[in-house]
Length: 275
Image (cartoon, rainbow, N blue to C red; front, side, top):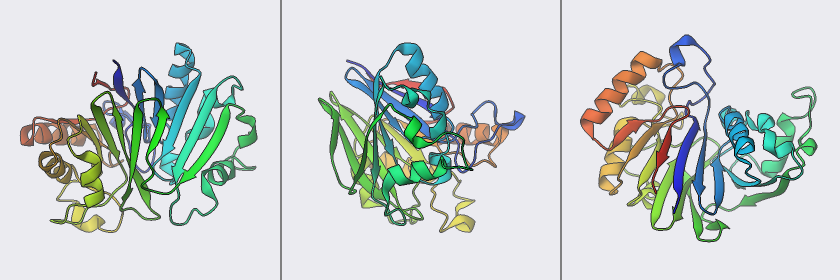
């Protein structure tokens, strides 16, 4: 059985192409989960360009793409997802119905590719075979035996968290979300309960958080608290603040590992094999 998680973009808010963001990566949110049954991708930040190149290289002909929400850092890589331009490819797009996006994911993706924003329209992506806007709470089965559960997150304009189960293995993708100190989010708790890997929005530290309340993000310390309480096996610190340059990320990595040995910092190109 195969169950692999790969990080193609781990940065939050804006892509960072600088000498200060080399070690941990500067691409915005995009991950993939590969099982025996097929590939599932989450979010289309700038990291999705590399995912597309990898799928082409490996001869993959189908994928499901789920969006947490449609803020720019999670969609701006989509026009550069090369497989979607191939009419022989089958790309299934899924997104939750969120506040402020009544026209759905197809409209949002098309708008960012309209002239003068981009020279190629969404219609040129002939590999897209479906667009689905689902109510949060929907349970999907994109491939036989692969179950994707959904839950509401706390974020401006809304966001959707995911839990992917296959063959007794589970991973949770929880970004972008803001916690309330000492009041764990029941939706998050349900998604992460007992997972083998929890990928969580750790944009800030607890020390930074009080000045960021209302911005829609959480901390790595909160992630550790949730992981411990939820019986999580491993925690991937994710959605790094652009201001957290490599030396700061190294400090976070060392402190997190010392706090809980199940925690690690996700980097662009990192792969985690769960089965």
